[in-house]
Length: 232
Image 1 (cartoon, rainbow, N blue to C red):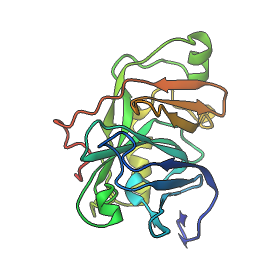
Image 2 (cartoon, helix red, strand yellow):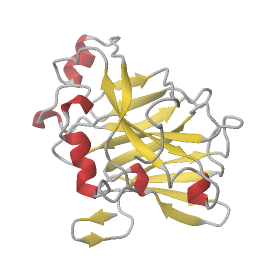
Image 3 (cartoon, rainbow, N blue to C red):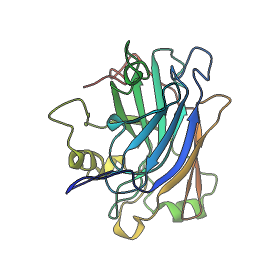
C-alpha cells in the first residue's frame, strides 16, 4: 500500500478473484490471473501471474479503498475490463467504477492491458434520486436508473494527471459521479464483494454493508467513441 508518508507493504487485502485465460472464448485476459485488492487509504489492486509466480501492482486501476475487482466481458478480443467495488476513504460515498484496458504486444502487463487503461464512473441519464440510497432502496425495491459509464479525467500514464490525490479529486468532488445523494451521513454506504455473471460477463451485482444490493445490467461497450480504454 501507499500512504502520504511513503510506501508500505501489502495492507488489508480483502476479497480475491481468479480470471481464467480468455474465459469468454477469444475475449478476456491473455493469462490466468489472481487479483487481490487493498481495502485501505490509497490502496492498490494486485495481480499474480501463475506462469512465473510474480506479483504485480496495477496503478492504472486507481488508488482507493477497494473490496474486490471482477472481470467483465468487453465482447472484443483487444480490450479487457473489470468492475470495481470501491469507495473513497471516510468522507465520500461509493460510486460505481469500471476499468477498461487495451491489450498490447509484450510483457504480462502489456498483453493484459494493464499498461494502457482508463477508469470510468457511472453517471445517471435520468433524474437522480433525491434521497440517499437506503431510502431509495427501501421505498422502491424494484426501481431502476439508466446511465452510462463516463471517463474520469485521470490516468496513471499521463504525467499531469497521475497523482494519487488527483484521482480522488476527479471523482469525489464532481457530483455527477454520485448515483445518489452525497452527504457525510452516508459515507459508509460502500459497495462490497461484487460478482460478475460468469455466463455472459455483461452484468454484475454489487452489495453493500448497509444491507442492499444493486444489479448493474446490460453493460455495453462502445469502442467507436471516447477512445475507450486508451490513455488520454
